[in-house]
Each structure stands twice: as C-alpha cells, then as structure tokens.
Length: 118
Image (cartoon, rainbow, N blue to C red; front, side):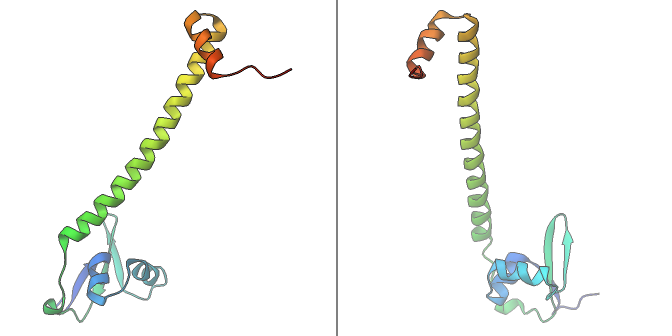
C-alpha cells in the first residue's frame, strides 16, 4: 500500500515535478532508470518522495499540448487524403477519356496533359 508521500505520476506530471523534459523521462523508462507501469496505454512513473506542495500541474497546458499534436496529425492526414483524392479524380478522368465516355473530359485532359514531343 502506498503511503501519502508515494504516488504514481503520468509522464507529463513527472516531467513537471522533476523539471525534466518528457523525452528524458521516456529515455528513463526505456533504460529502466525509473519504476514505471502502464495502464490503459499510458505510462505512470513511481515517485516515492512525492510532495504535493512542490508540485503544480497545469492541466490546461497538458491538454493544449495534446490537442496541438492531434491537430498536426489530422492536418497531415488531411493533406495526404487531398493528394490521394486529386490523383484518383485524375485517373478516373483519364480512364473515362480513353474509353470515350465523356467527350468534354477528353478535351479537358488534353489541356491538362500535353502530348509528348516526337
């Protein structure tokens, strides 16, 4: 059983408490320099001499950082999907033009893709 001076902290909380970077804490975990456990896909680091009065958690900052990371990931995924969609539309237009299904597409594709010099 944990006494009042022992506590499990998230990586961010431990980082703030010890004034170390998150990447340093992750290296500590990888090299087993800290006692840790994983619950629900999240790491917790054991802090045996925890003092509540010397620890301030900025929950808004943590969630803000997490949201920024999610936004960046979604923006990258969105760019990738836009490129794939554009490529698929172009391939469909080319395929339909080859089949002669829509004459306007043939004209449009000739403007987009110039003929190769002979």
